[in-house]
Length: 477
Image 1 (cartoon, rainbow, N blue to C red):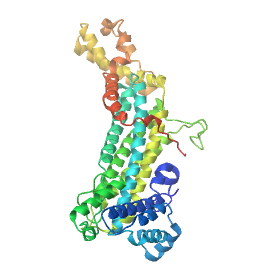
Image 2 (image 1 turned 120 degrees about the vertical axis):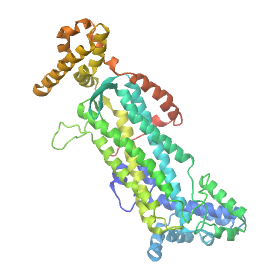
Image 3 (image 1 turned 45 degrees about the vertical axis):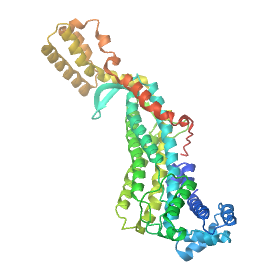
Image 4 (image 1 turned 135 degrees about the vertical axis):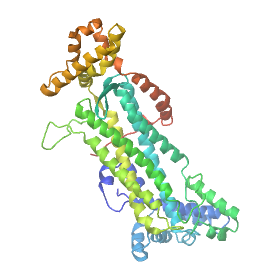
């Protein structure tokens, strides 16, 4: 299935799901055009215009016959794609053809059809995003208590837990899901506005403002929209495209952050993205298990973040009631962004459902640095037992620098605790060392924060998406 963008690119053929490709296909776009034409004709008939039930039936009977060959021929002549398809539809409907597009403009049909397609695409985004949140929540819950080395500035810092770290990714994605829900909850349509947004043609057809208002309500209801933009030019405000793509860019930002963290942690050996039995990590190095899924997620995220800037630039140059230099641009950019976001989300769900954790490596990495993290607790405990705080601080400083020097110069194992145990200044801690070096003492409230976040934020969110765990994701490559 071809995407609706101008070239058959890898977004459609390699990364996006068949469902998203279909939702944004040229054929689906034409079907939306016909849906708008039929809804308009039905509503105009209901409001008293001379349109018959026979004509409506004829339109509905031929709605699915796209008559593409005729449309292609007409477009070569007219250089106007919508007009070509209008004529092709009229050929199929000799009785109803004369009442098609009554009072309408091209933008009335194309803009409302585009919004139908964007709404459907955003619903697909919502479902995949909910599945990702659900998968990552399960992962965070399973590892809420598993202590690991924390990092700031990408340097070893106080320990945290694997589950708490996953909640940092999860919080971003949960926010993204709330934004998608908010947008879908009040998703508008252009309405029945006319050539410059004044509804003049429909006032001339129907005679009264009340009937024009009724027409807009009727058509909106038939298309599944609750509210139209209150004022427009010929097209709906392109600022709305920016709002939609800003949400997609937010998802890309969250995905990129997680993908980078996963790649760092896989480099450290603490976890690994899914790697299939016959998967090849490198054509030259058979032993390699490259994090290709997370790398691809980062690549697509970068594409979405960069491309999303385009809709803001388009919104900024809408000359008066409209200009046509947005048309070709939007036809490429908006489908591209949805196709790429679909690819990101499918990768995110797949990776999160299959993340492997290696507790022994995590413990080894933690124990290598824990002696340094533990020095503050050691200092406080020794002081409580009667030691001189300033003198003890100096002894720890001397031993810590010596231990670090040994590690850097000879690759020695961190022997800071051995040095402190052998120092008579810390003799009051005999019998306490194992307790002082328990990693659980250094993760603070991380397990509690994880469980509280999952319970108070994520669980209520997922209650609105009961099928999230059952969303199927199959990667083509």
